[in-house]
Length: 80
Image (cartoon, rainbow, N blue to C red):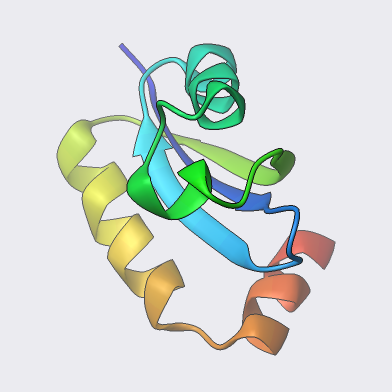
């Protein structure tokens, strides 16, 4: 099973980073208000970036690294 690390842009132009094993379902959940407390008040969200990784552990580690980046560095990641 593949896991994904993703970045969405919220309606207030903030960025949210998360992990999932079903990307389409998770984006739908964010937009339905059931995805995450942070995105619930900031819907709708738009998927900007995703990358596939082999395991949940790898996804969590990558998510941690991305969350430490500032906004500009996250936006640069989208360009790669």
